[in-house]
Image (cartoon, rainbow, N blue to C red; front, side, top):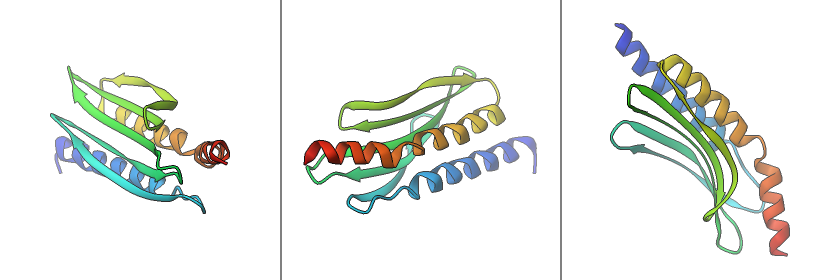
Length: 125
């Protein structure tokens, strides 16, 4: 494979890893589903959405996109329009650096999942 093909394969692998990390998030009292979609013109977002008993959706997600000669990575946790965790957007020049940030952000977004969902459930009752 040439270097561009290797970079594309690396991107697919990193998106799969991030998707799997976030898909493993579960809570015994809350239904969840994973999602992934493309962000035009050159990006992707993966994550997991939880539906609380009161109908609010809680999203754990990471994204990577390319524009302006750089790769941009974001990570967040939101409950409807409320930001529960917003990781700073990181812009890096190289694909390998971008994929490393994507891996890190997937872990950082997933880490507080149980605590955040428990807090939101406690607010309901």
